[in-house]
Amino acid sequence: MTTTRTFTISPVQIPTSIESADAADFIAAIEVRNLVEAHSYGTDELSYSPAEILPRWLDPHKKHWMFVAWLDGRIVGRGCIDALLDEPDTCWLDLRVLPEYRRLGIGTALAQRVEDAAREDGRTKLIVYAVSAGSSGEKLPSPTGFGSVPRQNPEVRFLLGRGYSLEQVERGSRLALPVDNVELAERLAASAAAAGPDYRLHEWSGRVPARWLADMAALYTAMSTEEPSAGLEEPESVWTPERITQTEELQAGDGRISLFAVVEHLPTGRLCGLTVLSVPAESSRVVSQEDTLVMPAHRGHRLGTWMKIANLRQLQRDHPGHSAITTFNAEENRPMLDVNEAVGFLPMGYEGAWKKLLGVPES
Ligand SMILES: CC(C)(COP(=O)(O)OP(=O)(O)OC[C@H]1O[C@@H](n2cnc3c(N)ncnc32)[C@H](O)[C@@H]1OP(=O)(O)O)[C@@H](O)C(=O)NCCC(=O)NCCS
Image 1 (spheres, rainbow, N blue to C red):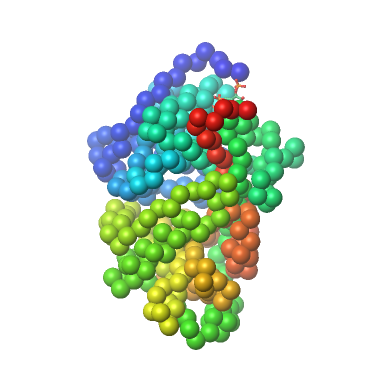
Image 2: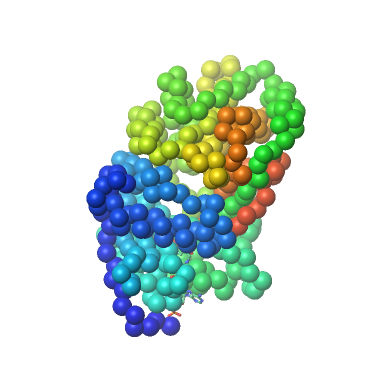
């Protein structure tokens, strides 16, 4: 039911810095992101500060649009688009309305606005990730055969009503810290032994060392297509050493530090796997698991477990006190879930990954 309460939608100018005089709307929109995420997952552990999120919006390899909904003199919803500059078809949308302002037509108006902007930019494939809280009613199964979302949930009804199709289910997982250090040492030794003499582990924190920039660019590029993306068929995102350096410079002031564990294949001298933890400055906040990848030719040697355990040891040794790590994986990505479950990750929630093709009639 749409009531007569009047709201307005306006675009947001992305500030160059959080300290800028024009940053207030961007900051309020990030606050909406955090409040809705906390409402959906039942925890504020997945919150990011505006300073941590701004670098993503200033990435020169991407295009972004942000719209906000105003009601009662405040920002109560946001609709965003994220797209690659070097790939013309796909874009990722994000729509959020504060819980107390739902069922007023705001989500519909924001969705219309971002879909129009995507269409005007020539985008034909829209992808949306939406958190779906568990519920006992009828389920909409993922076409991958792994996972489902409750058919009567608001976001499910909303997206189905707008012509989106469910393509995949993602699992959010959480590892409570600390993990026992003796157990970690034993598992590290076992993984190293299983990996054998052809592989060497390297670790660092902060910026990628110059000697590994080209290999890391190749790993990041592979990461964009190696993660199972089911019917979403998410496009390749090409990384270069320059893009890594630019990203590091953009993130320099955000207060977070990245911890890396990588594996070198000694016969070729090339890196064949990476894993990254993103650590916030405050130990009261949780750590975020970022990319993990073992190149296809090197799978089956326990390299994934080896890197993850080493990364975890580095975290507990150099940045102790964080209560947990969170990570997100496709529900059908059994090899990755196996590694995570073996480390101790437990499910904390599920997200539907949805797709809409523009120009295709809605059924
Ligand atoms: C999904 C979301 C954006 C919808 O925002 P909203 O402002 O409540 O949406 P609208 O008022 O425009 O609702 C449009 C239609 O969606 C469906 N819908 C939305 N919420 C619903 C609910 N709780 N129960 C049943 N249907 C619902 C209805 O068909 C509704 O039309 P109606 O009110 O005329 O019956 C909002 O619930 C939200 O922010 N959820 C969390 C974030 C999220 O999941 N985003 C992903 C969607 S991209």
